[in-house]
Length: 211
Length: 211
Image (cartoon, rainbow over all chains, first blue to last red; front, side, top):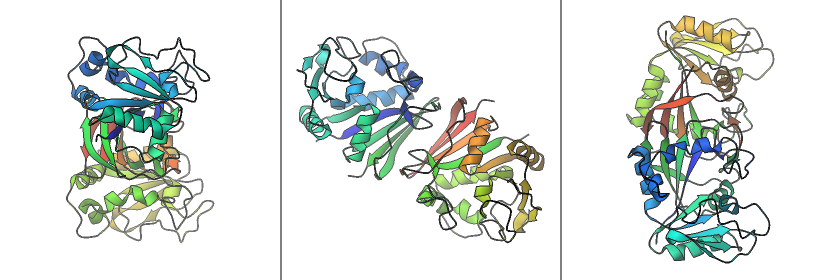
């Protein structure tokens, strides 16, 4: 069976998103600064149907992070569309061919029929909690890994539940000042750094988490 | 002229000390977990007059961090002895031969005569603020570097004042949950990672800070 992994960009002051998230600022004010590095990489661009990009240390990290993923779990905030009952016109931030190319299990309090998209992505809406979503994702992923995609609250839940085998932090040298943290109230998990990749801009540290 | 540098151990959740600092817990509850790695190193042990220790990647980081230091600046909390007017029986945490072997400028609101110790350390008490302490430290260090030694509040002040040329974080994979942070209210400095050293336990990232 595969691993349950999370990889996430984090500011020096520990934020994975800025404050005041909205449709205009989906990752919060300033939050996009955490992701500029990834937009430059050839692997990210290819996942999003774009040509070009750099074949850099960052790129190899992205390739490795997504290469073995068989299913994704994400929170309602990351899927977007506001809170409360669904407006079914909302089909995610990513257009008709989302970059996941695999089953995606979306945590929500509100039922909704599965949403098959182009390119192998199907959004399945899970109303009975993280554990159920992970179980469904594991079954869908088979031998491959499950990615806990975010956002902050979902990563916190997964850490607190001891559900992650690996956490990879992309440490971006910006200071956001405010925003969403992932390590609040997660207890005291035992982490071991197993791989460090330094690029000119970002330090990527992959931690194994003891179960 | 040398650089103004700070190197500090930090938890994954961004704490450089635990909560509830006291004489029994000088780095706060759990804070010592941030420093276990350094106690193993041969360089740290030699600075503290002890034999043995490991010649590891961590050790080379310690050697490099302290090798070029000509003077230190620290906050009153790091020197210890409680708050308010001085009890002059308090001569620091480190015994009669402290590990600094250089002038140390201690920020305080309360005047006190300089305190020469064994091994080249003299504690000089500075009552007119960080800028004055840094100026005196620079003059004392000559061509060598000035270390901003801590604690959290002094590092925050130095970051907010744009007084640091380099910040080296020793990222320790523990989650403290509560404690003292260094990046709150420091503005938006521009940092660039210039060296990353990975050991089996700790990830050391040295940042250059644009002035």
